[in-house]
Image (tube, rainbow over all chains, first blue to last red; front, side, top):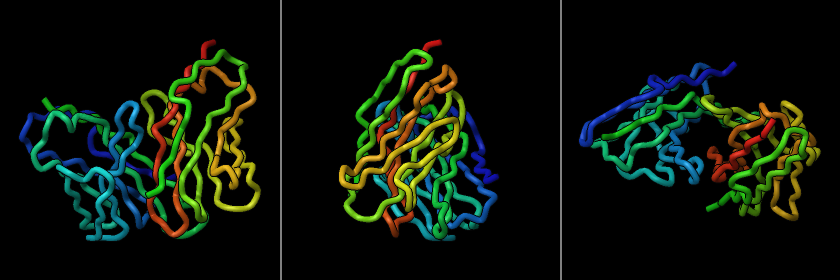
Length: 114
Length: 113
């Protein structure tokens, strides 16, 4: 089974802190994604990466950056955390080719910024 | 940009009732379609997917979905729900040739025993 592991289930950070959310997948997937999940808004794409060191902005990239130095690891960085970034953050991965193509998700990180 | 609409935001049913959750998308080309489920406290997981072929797709736990190309729809159905189906359900669309799935806003389903 594909496993997508996010480093923390719950985080509490202070306004202005730099926050790192880590995600690792074990199935050699090319694509990795960071989504933000908020009630009533569904999943909104922050950033995605289709290869090592490659990244593309999603729908809501402001206030975030990402890093993908190795194929299996995709990090989301909040440069200066703000209270409106309190949310559930979901990491996902997928293959590019083949009949699969569905996204596999991690457990999520619930971030609270105080 | 493509969009995905889920018309039912909250659905409350009694056990054994039938379920249909609507999903419409705006993209006009080839699409790959997905339904995901998120049980309370758990990660999102795939219920079923459509890539090609038979437009009636069967998934896990007795769920099925029908792709109607002319209506840009991919509605999820289950003939008889159980209390354990209480969860949030998300429809997603991935245009052919794209890496990225776009998700709907989700439908919260509560099934009363």
